[in-house]
Length: 423
Image 1: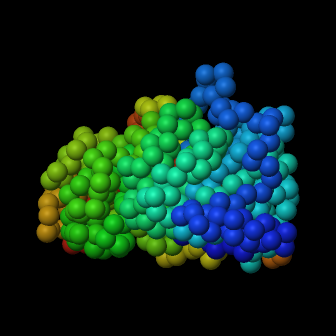
Image 2 (image 1 turned 90 degrees about the vertical axis):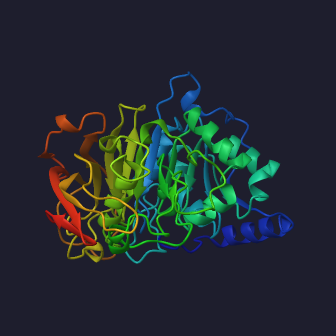
């Protein structure tokens, strides 16, 4: 879940109050900063105006937001001071404090966080508006006003919350179809926490609540393992295909909060379940990729299906995120099975004899926490990974201190992860 924000501007509070009163009879809530109706901004996605769209997805791992991930989405949308552009936040619950966070000046400090991270600076980067839609029902997901706002967005970001609410309220609605159409048109998309969990071709839907690593490894078919679109553990799915199909995230499942919630084990189970090394698996086991992302870290994915490249953006090193098993902070973990699990059936533990291959991208090495009271700037790291060819990776440390590490090999038995420590 993204770190909660408080509204920053008194004028903004008045705007929201007026907006909420005007829309009280609606099932949705809509608010904005800037001018969503600026006539200089085309409704056509800016990055696709010449027919040369390049898919772009920002997967944020939760915790404090990563300003550089939003700046990257703005740039990939083709937004500049000469073009303008609309940035849209969608969510099923919560508030609209992303509006001032994104529609801000470069160098503005986010005083809602105790670490005083900088805000996005979208107003200086060319955004003419930032809009938030809270869409809490299937009725709202069919509302013409909601669909019109989504249709004209130049970049779309799914906020944190509860991914089960997204599935229950959005799947197989006009909103769902419109989001898929925006992706086909090349509109950059992103998400954090539950929003990140929604973006892979396969997704942990949490329809029966969350699942911890130990439970997922002890029985990868337990009732909490609701994986979209593997309709094997729940009767709550109302569609047969994936919620979203993003070409660069084909055969991918994502998992945020990896470091702070010790989720590497459950990611192993998610990846196993999708592959044909498990009972009911639907993909060749070695083709399924798990992306685990630390808090305060974003995995930036670009390129078409089969040619995707992943890079990192991150906040400065934050000692608060360090745990015994995850001391390499600001990291993302790329997981696949080098061979099929030796046991992956209902009612029994997942068993694999160190056949799980993992690469770790780290934005920077461990270092002291940033100077107290200073505005801290997130950054894009030099480390990257080629999803198209796992055999051609160059393990190295880059000039900015970021690194690609691995391959590490893990196993599982009796509900435990076996093998090299992630740090």
